[in-house]
Amino acid sequence: MYEKYEHHGGEVWVRSDLKGKHREHCLCLQGCKKFKMGDAVNNCKKAQLLFAFCCLNNMTTPVWECPDFEEGN
Image 1: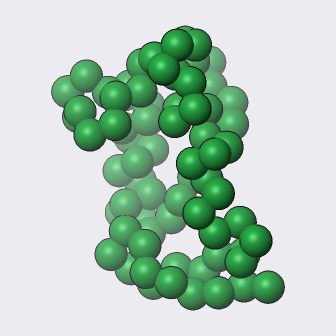
Image 2: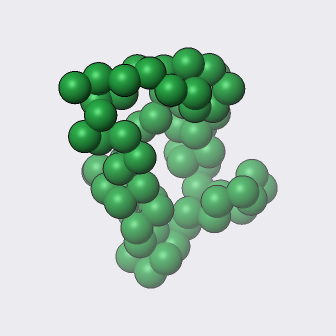
């Protein structure tokens, strides 16, 4: 049901059936034109902060709701 694996440079726990599924559920990755992965200067500031938080804390957080979403990725 749960498993450990390496992510963002640290060992994390995940529900086995959800491992790797954050990308297919994340509003940023699936359609926001403000999201510019790998471009710290032009990327959405909220997405950039959330990613930094996740890396710092060895977590993964898909975005399901956002007030700044703009369709068109």
